[in-house]
Each structure stands twice: as C-alpha cells, then as structure tokens.
Length: 541
Image (tube, rainbow, N blue to C red; front, side, top):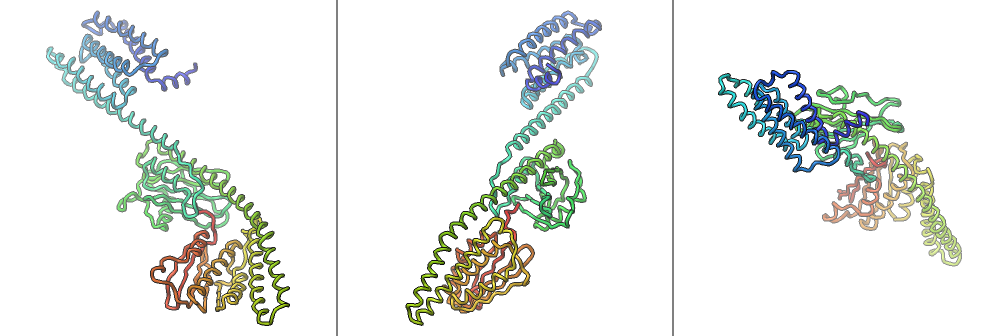
C-alpha cells in the first residue's frame, strides 16, 4: 500500500492511528531510557517493568486493530488504561519532572479523536486528578515545584480547549458540506416565482449569510442580471449594457472589507429597496466572492456577512458558485425544451383549427349567401351583418393561426396596424363607439402578444356593452420601457361597490397569463381598467 493510501486508511479509522502512535511512543520511550539510564533516578526497575508491560499491551493492540473493529466498551477501557499507565510512569520516574508527561498529553488527543468534546472533558478531568495526585506529594518532599504543577495544569486545560475547538470546527465543516450536498432540485419556476430563489435561500442557510447575490451575464443576451435574496425575499433585476461590455472582474475569496464592485452591488440593492446588511444599523462588514464561467454564462456570487467567517468560506462559496452556474445552464436547457414543446403544440392546434373551425365558418358564410337571394331586403340586411361578423372572425382566426406558426411568435409588428381595424369591427359589432389610440404610433410588439392584447380589448368592450350598457369605449395604449400600459374607459353604469376589487375573471386570467398587472375601478365617467403588460414574457430569473 502506498503512503497516501496508508494515510487515508488511518484517517478513516482513528483507532489504527491511536494504536500506532501508542506503540511508537513506547518504543521511543524505551530507547530513551536505554540511551540515558540516569533518567529516571528513582524507581528505575518499576518504571522499566511498567513500560515493558505497556509496550507488550501496545503491540497486542496494534496487532488486533488492523484485523477487528474496536467496540465502544473497548475504547473506554483502553482510554482508562492509557491514563492509569501514564500516571504510574510519571509517579515512578520523577513525578512533576518526569519525562513521561507526554503520555498524559497523548490521552487528550485520543479522547478527542474518539469522542470529540465528549472525550476531551472526561480526559481533562482525569488528567487533572492524576496531576494533583502525583504533584501534591512532590511539593512536600522539600523542593517546592508549585510553578511546574500550575503550568502543567494550565497546559492541559489550554490543550483540551484547542483540541475541542478543532473538533468542533471539523464537525461544523462536515455539517455544512452535508447541507451543500443536499442542494434542492427545483422544477421550472412559475412566471411570477424567481427561479433562483431556492438556490439563494439554500446558500444563505448553509453559510449563515444575511444576503446572497448572484450577478451574471448571458453571452446570448446583452444584459447584466442580478438575483438577490435578503430577509426572506428574492428579487430579480436586469440592466441593459452597451454591446460588448464585459462583466466587471472581481477577485474571488474572502474579503474583510468591501471592494469597488461591491459598491455597485449596493446601488443595485438600493434599486430593489433593500440594504445589504443583516441589521438596519450595521454596515456591511465582509463578503465572500465566488466566480463561475460556463459556455453560456459568466458571473459572480457574493455571500454577505457569512456567519462562519474564514472557516473554509472561500471553498464553500466556490461550490455554491458552481452549483448556481449549473442551475443557470439547467434552466436555459429546460426553457429551450419547453419552447420546443410549445411550438409543436401550437402547430398541431393551428392545423386542427384550420381544418375544422375555419372551414366551418367559410361553409356557413357560403350558406348565408345562398339564403340571401331567397329573403326580403330587411332580412338581407340582418344576414349581411351576421356575414360581416363571420368574415371578421375568419380574419382574426387566420391572424391567430399565423402567430402560432413555427418561429412567428418572435416577429415584431406595429400595434396600430392591428388596433385600428379592431376598433371599427367592435363598433359595428356592439353598436357603440370605440376609440383606440396608440402612443407612440411606432409602438411595436411580438405578434403573439398583440393577439392576446386584441382578445383582451375585445373582451373589455363586450363587458362594457353587455354589463354596463356603455355607448362609448375609449382605449389608450402607451409604450413604456419594457412594457405597454393600457387604459380602458367606458361611460357605462360601472359595477357594484362589492365587485370593484374583483375585475372580470376572464380578463384577469388573460392578464395573468401575459405576466401583467390589472386594476379595475369605477370612475366618474363609468368603469375603468388599468393594465400593465411586459413586452418580454420570458420567465424571470
């Protein structure tokens, strides 16, 4: 077995390391006595016999430890024997000045390796008892050695505390690594649910951080994106960037003071209404930074005010950064798969609608034309109105099928080219005036979003006429940065006070599907709807 493999085996089984160390110390002690027979000066025979028996015991323990596993009772018995033999050797060989005090320290290490704090404290108490049992009589033999007694006692205490602290650190580190390994696997998030929230919450929980920030750049999108978790809230921000602007470089590792780029993060958090501190009165003290770089993404992860300070925080932050990079790549892949599946479903639905509903509308329109020649002029007028509605429905259905075609949903079009014909059609259909205004006239949007918008306007006009008996419906569409604001005002009777806070269900559902926000209320003229619709309906980060 090679040396690294032997060390790994000893690390896996502390009993082997303890027995090997005990045997080594006994061999060295026996050689030391032979090299310097003047130490100890008294009880030489007793010391040699005790050490010889202890060497035999160590050899037996070393032989069996590589063949069998020690039980808990065996470990306790071995610990007691080690302490007792160490006390006897120091008693026989000079008491407080004995060269065998190292055996007593050895028992502190064995207790720590076996049981951690539970082993350190009993071992320390046993050593202090042995120390005073050996040392107090030595103080009364004429030569006072009180200073040696005190120093050895304090040495045992300090050694025990340091060993217990090291064990506690090792335990905490193992627990954190275990929690990191149990990283939650999230499904594709809902449109209104930040999909990195689970990852940020898990990172903050593992490292005891007050705030976790991930900032990255998608090589396919010219924007910097920031995901923030703070005080049980997850927020997503997106910042446009000039073409070719790289992500600012930040040195990874633990920083006890903020860097210039952390100042930029403070500004971003302020835009989100957050302050990067675990307490409103305390400024940000430290940050641990991890970097990641994949085929599509590059970015940084900032762990603010981690609870565990320098305890391997840098390596843990790197693990978290790698995992978040994986989540980014995973989400992109899931999004592409979902887009492909939706595209296939759209094409299938478009074929079915074309082969059934659209063909049936065309056949019904032909039937109306054939009946027109057989009826009076008054009935012809009514049939013409019905035929006009059917032709308008055919036109809108064809437009819908075109937007569902492969790759067509990302095509941009002028909103007014669709809105103006809709206003005339709705006026004729519902017998009320419909006015629609688009600002600016050059406002453009994706065709699938425009189709949903037209459906929303049609539903709102229908409700205004049927439920509010409106004679005028005014619609204003205003393009804002990243979205469209829609104001729909009618002169109808409005709604009951109890229903003001409950906009029409069909419109509410459509606006929610578009990722927008809807507010409905009575006004002095009638009833008013305020709708905000984002131009980009991609699932937010």
